[in-house]
Image (cartoon, rainbow, N blue to C red; front, side, top):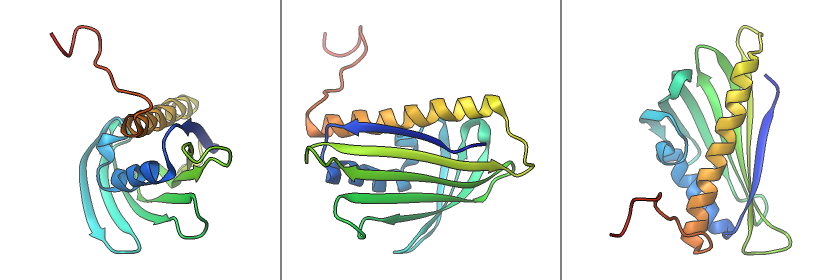
Length: 161
């Protein structure tokens, strides 16, 4: 499976988006559709080992590291697959302060997974592309709501009466 990436500009500060990325480590079901049965197996100041079920992909175990110290306004969270029946590789989430507007942030998700058997699955690749875009959109919506730039409104027929 080739690398898959999705990037969005978010109308929220770097700090707001970075806090969401850190929260996503411990509460992935709030940000990624299909996540359940989350267990933090090991939690240190340098990494977290997390096990969870990821929809049709089944149970996964990952080593998660994060870094926002190298350069101001840039953060990186890396999810390295330690155990999965079909794939090896990593997912990287980049958070970058927009150069032209300090109230905007760029969020980029990258999937770098390879099938263990070496065979690419075209239908899985398309599904990953859709899920990646959806996951970025969820963070964008939450961050912009927190920043007050995009209020979350209930679907028609719900809310105030």
